[in-house]
Length: 138
Image 1: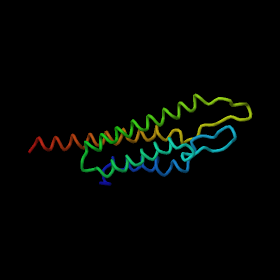
Image 2: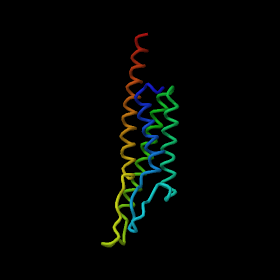
Image 3: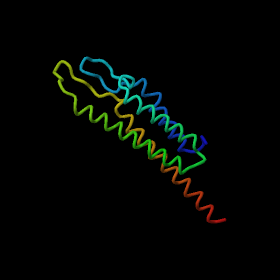
Image 4: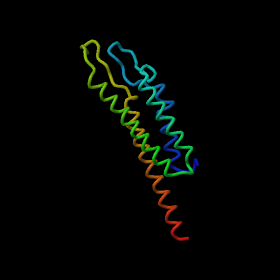
């Protein structure tokens, strides 16, 4: 299971969306307070669902088709999360010269997660093609 490259990619997605998101601020608001994942329940649920889906996909290594579909669902979940972040950035109002909010590195975690999921799906597809080619020879 762990010797496959897609397992490493899925484990990295879990670390990004599950563990790392708890320590990295999403943005800094106008009062110079760091906004974390736990401050917004919707964002926390989406981050948790993405981490859980990556672990479930990692443990479904015997069924490559199911793993592929779960990764696609995880990508959709991350696109929704990214859309929430873009919506939040575009609708911030009332900022003055003294109180300017800043984006944090945490807002880019869904992008990195999507890239890792695409790489995992490529590796799963390559494994599936290899198994099909061996079956043709029998």
